Length: 115
Image (tube, rainbow, N blue to C red; front, side):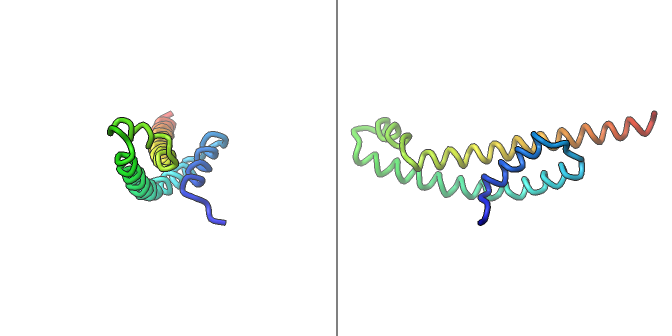
């Protein structure tokens, strides 16, 4: 069974949180997350299109645009779109965390050379 991009990113999150991460492994995960970021953007594009289409369909059934937006916010299309956005945010947050981790490890290494 193939893992979804979302599952892969959540697995990286768990590994970062629960393990004693080495700089080599952090760099490897960072590289993979950067590659997965494009997949997240593609998914958001797809889900945003489906959600906007649903909004348009509901506009014809509703009295106002505001009512259509409220109704669309309770649909599966909205939920899938929000999950895609959350996955991209998590991916970017993990990348930022790993960059900070690697920067600190590099500084520690440089400071240790002069002791």
